[in-house]
Amino acid sequence: MTQKEPKEKPVNDLPVMDEREGIVLFYPHIPKEAVAEVTSVLHSRWIGQGPRVAQFEQEFNIRFGGVGRSLAVGSGTDALHLAYILSGLQPGDEVITPVFTCTATTIPFLYMGVTFRFADVDPATLNISIPHVRQLVNEKTKAIVCVHYGGLPCDMDELHAIAAAHNIPVIEDAAHALGATYRGKPVGSLSDFTMFSFQAIKHITTGDGGMLVVRDRALAPKAERIRWFGIDRSNKQKGTWENDIWEVGYKYQMTDIAAALGLAALREFDQTLAHRQRLFNAYKKELHGVSGLHLIGAGHTDRTHAAWLCTAIVEKREAFMQYLRANKIESGQVHYRNDRYSVLGGRRDDLPNMDAVEDRYIVLPLHLHMSVADVEYIGSVIRRGW
Image (tube, rainbow, N blue to C red):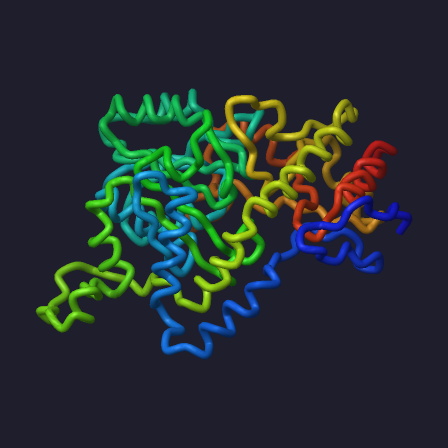
């Protein structure tokens, strides 16, 4: 591998990529301080849900939650299911949801007996298509779900206008978008419900985990019960619990071990986000004007990209991937159209934009073990053609 020497080290002096391994697509980031944080928890009374979870929720909410309430859970999928329950969805209700997303966005509807209608992608962003949402919404629609693909916020003003006209909530799957902003406001403060993911390779990882930001703080007690078997845990600990469960609950809580990881990552989040955005901006520079390639998510001035994924639309994708692999650069598709899966109903025929891009999108490496020089090397390889 002829990669040039990096001009700078990634965040926290992390090592650059091993030349024998090449440049991998993802690499989890664990802050150095997390080791001491987790060790402290392991030596304490609490390793399950305890004071660190509460602290993580509070600090996260100050940064991202606005006037709402942040609730830490075991996964982003837990957070989405919790949001769907809190939004009042019932068996037979209908929701609009993106076809292009992780299956975690859609699978909880199967738990609930909720009918989902897939919306097409916007070919310029791979976010949900606003015109298609307008076509799909009707008197049966009870919620609109959106996903900020790669970290680029959706057209939230348009989605909120549609939702307001039908008196339904917007539920944001912001698994990719921690740190993104829309018209000066942080994602997390915009809608009725916003989910964040702390899965292994996200901006912040807690090993696995998630956070649900609920705008209406009056819903917080119900959310806290549902994430703990339906038990009113605060009253139980006070010795005033009536020993009754009157609603279905789940085991969706976060642990203090996970929260300790999250707190360490939260403290250095500005540095983490800045480095990822620096890499994304380097891709914009390196790939500008490359024939047969279009970078997704560049050029917006009313929103900031959280830079979780760097995705491009390329011609001859298979040849492109093989060419990168020959130069020790990993790439992949990461997410797939959800209607490819039989459990979600199989292939739809009303998604022309998704049809047009499904064999052409590709994700390039972007993570904290990379430097700008790594992006420059990838750019030089791509510019030679494939």
